[in-house]
Length: 439
Ligand SMILES: [Zn+2]
Image (cartoon, rainbow, N blue to C red; front, side, top):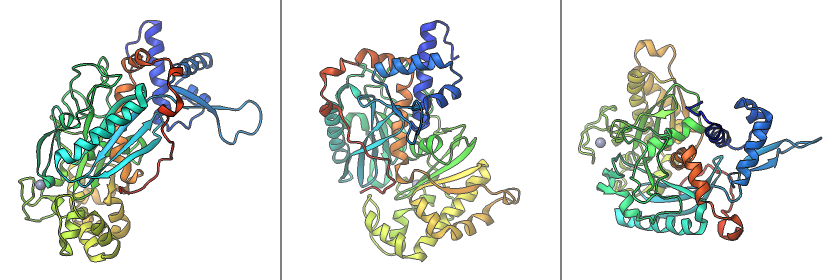
């Protein structure tokens, strides 16, 4: 019951449960399925759905393929309902999307950047502000994934780009949105006291963006919508120019005390001795990912450049791909020995390394496993979300703060008369969640 004692609190609690169930299930369950799942009385569910529809939070459509009788209704996102703006900032480009309850994603903008903090985050902040103005009260928060460790207050370090203690909220320079609380603190998924995916009752919706590490957010999305769903202990590795990794326990990434964990790529797991831009020597990430692929074939690498060339190497140079996969496999074995995960999931280029050189990966992994692990080695799987994990994780972080009694109360307060807004101003162009690479 989550401490709900009065009938008003109980209603608020049930509204959150129902919206959460619609969101987590991808807005495909029928009202009767949801009623059963949540153990609600039918009348209670009807009243809840009607109230949420009136509040502009849900909209019901008949279930597809329903042939006879009264059609079964499927609650899904309201056409003028809440939107999370989510951005995935990679070392060479960023992607910005509008995400609705249920996880429907509409890509709004994809742009390359020059690798400087100002040249990256300035234009992103302008794009976010423009879409916030366009979508008005619908925007309930902004989530941003970045390819580096995040510290208190949204400070990020991206070693490959030479970023040190870059103040992300300051450079995004977002004006407070309609749901913003003046003076609300910046916070990120890994901040002490809260973990990704954990709503914090009593916390106002952020006027500043939710900032998270790309690997942590990809892991969060994998736990909600991918192969780590219902997995007790999992390991997620995200491979882009180098790699990051994080342990997921009971659906939550474990990002460390200050939020700057998820840095398995900076452990000496592959036996190399190259100096890493992070300051350490022999980091695993020096041997796995696009930078290592480019280096192995004698091409320029580093600074977030060379994605297209790396993709060509991935597609055509078996030797370089296998070397990458072997280094990945050796490190996976070490982490499996340490953490005993049920499943290891790979996102980004990890999916291609597994597809193109899975045998080499496993051949390098198995000898590194302790004897007691070899009988039942963990499954290694490509992400169900491809390159979209970090973006979807940024979305989940926003909705985790919104889908609370406090978040819904703010929505009610900030929700102007819908009739005053023309549909044109408010609509996002719908598209299905496509698995595709950046740019
Ligand atoms: Zn390093």
